[in-house]
Every structure is written in structure tokens, then in C-alpha cells.
Image (cartoon, rainbow, N blue to C red):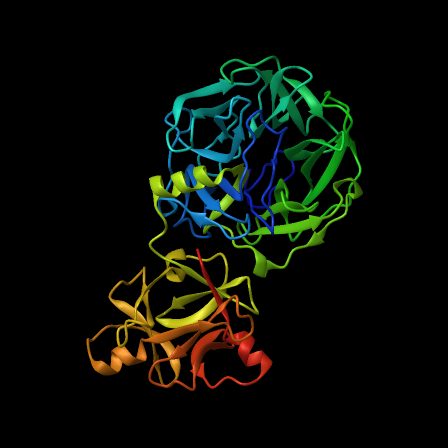
Length: 461
């Protein structure tokens, strides 16, 4: 579940993430009978932003061809929203079942009132993640506590699915519970799956890796791993070195299909809902190295998510069904935690996240002075464009003059610091490029390595 800092009892968790030159064979749980093939992924999440402008407690989807750069679907609007319980969800989880279809689970909680204690979780069935059927709430226990961050996996030995989640049982602190089911309609009596003797939430499983099962979870403000040769409740023991970036929760394990690399995603709640990723070449080692933030970009406002491999055909079908975003976000090369935005009509780069979040969304339209160039139209103020004035970039209303059109037109070129990124050369001052200086955008001649880095950006979502 995603949260602001608060006492461990009760605790909860946040969203999620995505990551590296990977194309995984599975995320959480055992590979299904019809495991996905192809370099594509789907992410499920809900959304929150610092001042609440982006809060939405429905199921959101994004897709990726490399599990690094994520493209929100449906204009980052929800594709389905619960109608029962609190009327909202947190911490969605997508599992590909043994028959190749999907089941979606989620916490029954709208907003951040942690005192609400639901013994139920939301459940949907889906053949293709383009339609959702059989909505229901599944009761997991009779305790006076919550059912946070449900996830599921296939337990081949039992011939059943396990549903794990965070709850406070008779120990007085959060543990990971488990129920077993064959249909996600009814479930067995709850059992304690893992209790290391202290408060934990957000269990995430990788099943059957070299004959070992790995469970990552949130302890205090860090992500910690446990492992077991079986999936039996009570069999897991802690083994890993904790990782964190600030207060970190909501672990997601992802395996590369093209190498032996594993990735661990974590979601922070300070600042609000930022994803970080770590990698290892040996899951059994229990040690992780941070991944360069240049390599990955989370969906805007995404919180406590889930990543599931899909086929290329499924990727294409999802994009066809929900559409690509009508806008882009632009990331700084040498400050990859910062995005191009306007604030008080001044162009600048600021650290994600912030509100209004639409101030960092742009439509890259054909150049006003030359259609082979580009102009940056604001999503927040569609009559306004980024233009230079006294060499500084500001957001102005298009007055339809030739001067404005030229000041607002740029040529997109290969990145000056990295040719896989982009730089933007001024139309009417062709010896100058857009760069940031003290986080403010301007056009300047570029020569030094620092200036080249300042003038290099990634255009994504």
C-alpha cells in the first residue's frame, strides 16, 4: 500500500515500478501454463500526486516494450474502477493464470484513511486486460484488521493459487497472510505465511528460481528478502541485505528474459510515489546495485503497481484498445529526476513529482515557423507555447506573429551528450540550443561537456 510516513502499526504500502534491458519470463508467482513470450510488459497501478490533483483509485494500465520506459494507456485514466466496498482501490496486482487469462486483485481502500479495515479485496477476471468481468469482493478473514496489497501465485504442489497480503493477526503487528483458492471466488481459511517477529507489509514472490522461492517485503523503510525451498507457510527465512532510497516500500521482482539479471523495484513515499530500481545477476546473493535513473521512467503519478509480461500481440491490442497518450513528458539527461515544466509561465526543470502535474505535459506539434521542426504546446494552457524571449524560455499565448512562431520553433536533433536522447536547436538562433541553467530553461551556444549534458533530454511519457 502507498502511504505517507506513519507508525508501523498499522503500516501499509505504495506502488511500483518497472525496469531495465529486460523482458521477463514472469514477475510474481510461477510461470503460467501459457506464459507470455515477446518483449512486452503491462503495469497496473493507481495514481496519487502531491496535492491530490492526480489522485485516482481505479486500475490504471501502462505498457512497455523493454520494461524501462512506460507508456500510460487511456490517457492515464482508469480502465476499470470498483463499484463495491469503498469504491476505490490501491495496490493492484495482475496475475496470468494457468489458463492464460488474467485475474486482477487489489486492496479495497479509496484514499488514505488507514483506519478503515476491510477483510475483503477487489477481484476481476479478464481475458485480455481490455475487458473486465465477474467483479466481486473476496473475503479473506474474520479478523479486525485490513487485507492490504494482495498478490497471488500458483502453488503447483497444492494445485491451487495462493493469495498473500498484509494483515495484523494475534501477534499485534503486520505479517504476511495466505489463503488458497482455485477460482478467486472462494478461499480457504487464512494462515500466517511469513512472520519474522516484527512489522512487515507488501509481500512479493518469485517462485521456483533455481529450486528456491524468494519473498521480498517492506521492513521499516527498506526492502528485505526471505527465501525457502518450499512454499509452505512458515518456511521462509530472511537472507538479503536491505535496500532503500528514502522510505521505500512495494517491492516488485522482475526477471530479464535476455540475461540472468534480476530487477527489484521499490516505491517511495518521500517524495511521494517515486520508483527506484536495483539489479543483481544472482538473486541468491541477496545484494543489489542501483540502476541509473536515466534508464527508466515510471507512468506519471503511478503508485504501488504490478508488472506482468505480455506478448507483443497483447501489447499491440492494448494500445489499439486504449490509445497512446496525446502528450509527452521531457526528462533531463543530467538531472534524470527532473522534467521540463512551466511554473509561473517560466520554462524550467523540476524534480518529479509535483502539482499541477499537467504543467510537465507537452504536445510536440509541427513547428509554428517550420513544420519540420517542433513547437511545445502546453497541456495545462493549450493557447500557450514555450518560446524564447531574451534567450530565456517562457510560456506565452500564441499571438500569430512571425516573431512568435520563430521564437517557438525548434529542430529536434540527436542528443548532444547522448545520441540516443534529443536536443533542440533554435529556429531563429541556429547557434543556440535549449538547455537548463540553474534549472531554468534558455537557449545558449553549446560547447562544453556540461553544456551538452544540460542541453540533452529524453522525450517520453
